[in-house]
Image (tube, rainbow, N blue to C red):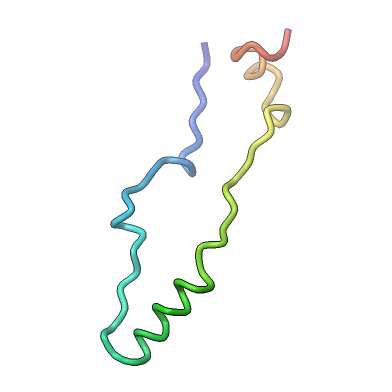
Length: 63
């Protein structure tokens, strides 16, 4: 049976995603703007019909 893994969806620790800012007025403004206007990324979505027929057959969706 074939196995498939998408390496783009591997979970990473939240500590690695944090951004570092300098402790000054510009840094505080940048941090505030990041909180207010950041984080609107939509998660990636994949369609099973995009997989090749042999993979669909392996996972039981194609006969």
